[in-house]
Length: 120
Image 1 (tube, one colour):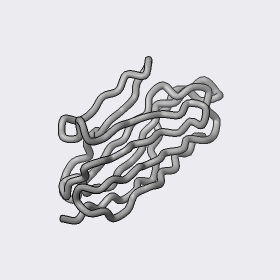
Image 2: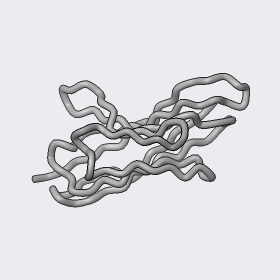
Image 3: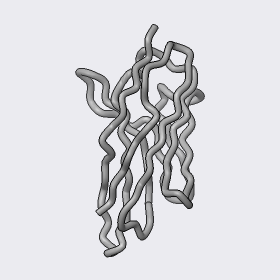
């Protein structure tokens, strides 16, 4: 089993910054990809950013130039540095990981989510 634990959410004024962290633990052979998703009230969940094989990063157009995703492989930890935050960034942010477990099965895992609220 693999667990993802997020931290770093909170309330911030527009223009401010937050840094989210997601720590993966458990029976991990290899993390194939990790990413951040968000879901605002009344909206569908959307991809914010991810890191896939080879360290390739992808960003939603709405966050390009403001958010930076990074990963510390030795700690199995994913980060999302969010700058120049806007009220429309308000959402529950969830971490996702595509993991090959110690049993050599490949599964997808989600964290519990962390609330990010940006006030105007």
